[in-house]
Image (cartoon, rainbow, N blue to C red):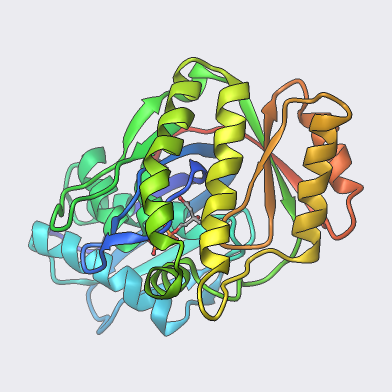
Length: 328
Ligand code: DP6
């Protein structure tokens, strides 16, 4: 192929309403449980992949700075699979910028690897097939499989060996105009990366099997609630999913604890809004200290104001259902 080849794409972060935690196949990075997410606008990652002669290894620039060797190695593994399919041998320069804090529990790896899978596919001269790009992204980071699609997205659990597992769109962004109010409680990188946290949980938590057995029924509730647009069904199931996975991680030895004092303060704000002010709002947390509150578009301002007044909450981001991958 002619060189250099370049492509730029934009993807949104996503927040799992039904959580993925645990792998059924570590080599293929297959999730042990189904997960369901909302793709979040305006939390974007923009990634440019340029294939260049003269590079002896891939270069990854995150937010203008060279990435850690571990991060670059993960990007190279994803690029290698796409290059092999395309018959390309050139190394790549990857430039990626996030419009939200990197590695702080705001799923930047999800939008990052989704954008990389799509941009690398195009830079290698292949047609962008969303199902294939989602499977490629999933092998790098399972939550990334969901960020290729807009709106509400499901990644099923994977049977060991199922290398083609990809996410699918449950409903487009226009299906339901919900809001996620992100209460940012810390800047900087999280202490235990999700991959390490889930491996350690599987190996040492006595509650791991219980979590894996329970998660599908919780995902069923989330899916049915989304399809029927019933916040009163999605919200409680979403909170159950997050607290069940955090409890499972906390029971690992030694414990994996992502919550901080501000996390608990924000959680109790959400409970107060619900119990005292009768606002339909529920909370979820990922592998970090932030709290994400799910509510209607009408209630988002009130929820955001209450979270901003909460001790330890630094700022809020109000996110809406966002689009799938966009080629720039
Ligand atoms: C808590 O997708 O980051 O955010 O596949 O090992 O890269 P790897 O894990 P990752 O895990 C995300 C976990 C979560 C829940 C979720 O997004 O479903």
